[in-house]
Image (cartoon, rainbow, N blue to C red; front, side):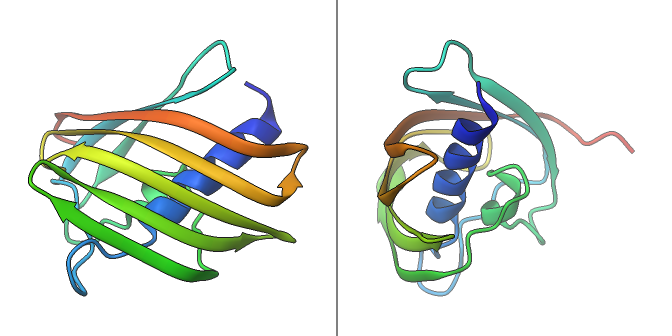
Length: 144
């Protein structure tokens, strides 16, 4: 996966998780070691990373996206469903506006998965759109 495509993906994922899911309370994963796999359409391999998450300090905008937080958002809406949630956001990334839509299933306690589509205007790193699949699962306690 090229560095620029990975940066696009990270920005899209961060934009998704920068919003609150239920009122003022953002979604929070259970405390422990999480493995997050991101598969970008058109890329031959997935990106897999592990994060030690503290549910009291969980900031999905930072940890799910590999450390890059999306902060300049003019719209950020999350809606709960019975088995997950959907998120839409409009954020700035440099000179580009990123419009992101994602649908996720799972409880954020043991696993979640979702599909993400991010559109860039003007194109960012030559890409107008990035689609990805995200699969995350709790794999155990964090090493001390």
